[in-house]
Image (cartoon, rainbow, N blue to C red; front, side, top):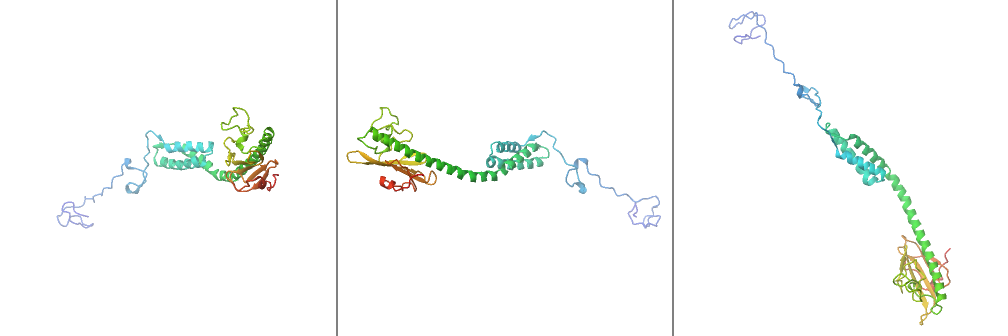
Length: 291
């Protein structure tokens, strides 16, 4: 205890100050003031004054819809409706996650959590179909290619038969000429239309293949196949035989089989590269007939 007058130390059992003689009978020890309580406005969500947990401040203004949530929802719908998993599904998932993160950090300033969730769900659903789509494509594309090749080969064989029929008609109609020397002779002429009627130069017997400009050594193209006809003719211009070839324009992509035929009317076939087929009637007759 200390003297309130001179500040000297006084034993607890003494009744007066040993230095100034002041009586200490009615003197009490001064109280130490306690620190003030923290103001209510300072209470926040993180540990605050003296480590006491404080309340969270919530945004009370007008809320705005997060644009990423809207974009995620739209992309999610597009990915489901139009099966655009890669183009729309993956972006919908990414934007959905970004939107939910932004909304959580905005402390109530942004809304749209439901739209972001819906976009996420639809995006994940569409993305889940990607492996199935790839498996179906891996099975379907080769089958479609094989079907296309089969159709091209069937059409080429049919066209060769049509040329045989046209040659038979031409040799009957113009016996002095025999068979037509080139495909363009069986067609309608350079205009593509039989404007002046049929003649031995343009018999108008073929109109389903583009033969107008298929002269000597010129191949005609139709449905993935190239066609060439060569006449076996005398110096006087009378053709006693011919050979017609049909070979794939892109071997392996448009077809595998090369077809040929002569005046005997038999369609023959051989698996060969484009341009590697026989170019004479005698060589064509060595090929096996089509079955």
